[in-house]
Length: 334
Image 1 (tube, helix red, strand yellow):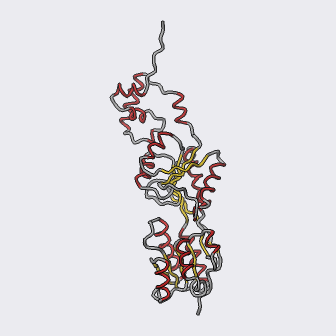
Image 2: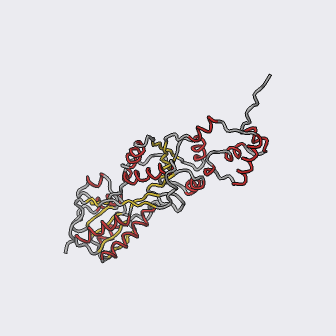
Image 3: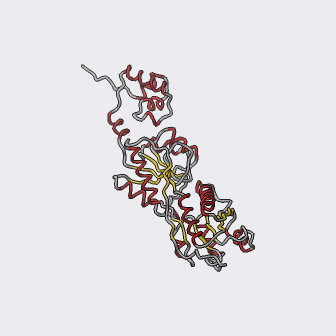
């Protein structure tokens, strides 16, 4: 009677080679670029597997190669980004992915260890990385060469990034105020804010834009009420006649405390826009952060990488917004 020779499994192969099953699995993976296994270890195990007659499980290999059509929005926060400047982001991502037959999944990797489970389960083909995201987790994703793109988050690591063009945006705001006749402009930002790349970029872009326009730019790291008190006491650069607020939150606070002075004694521009700014009296002039367009570009970069049409793009793609003119800017009183 002829008996079929039993198939040599990864478990049995690991026992023969006296290494862990995980090490053998990594060595025989169809995605060698996604593991941290040393190349000499991988080569030794593959050679031994071939010598012992190991063959891959066709069904398992097919599952490993198959794209599931799921893209993860990965963040280390429990709630998705669905409000403020992010209001259009989810629609932008979902629409761009849907046109290619893919689905967007919210994947809260609250701990770095959660990433192991996500990869093991093979639930996502690629990831859009959003703040807040720790350097340790981003470093893992880079080392494993898992398809990923960073959206509205700056990272020094080797990942494609899509950000707002803060320099172009601040030129729009400063030029608009300069044309209205302002010669001293303050940049107001809260000093205790959680750090984000846009804080430093907006500060730098503001200073450069003011110098190019030939006007005085004053950095004012003050909360809204302290800023207004300093401005009222004429201690902010001999009384700036206009202020650019770091974001819509700062702009709303200033608009509330300084509402009697806006726009004729103090013009106000916000560095980002939300619907709330349009509802205020006066409505606040603001720079748009083009999240929907940024999300569409990020989706395209990620899909190109997943499908092998392009190598990982390590540059930063910057997308400029627009100046939305409302009623909070006027010529300064003489």
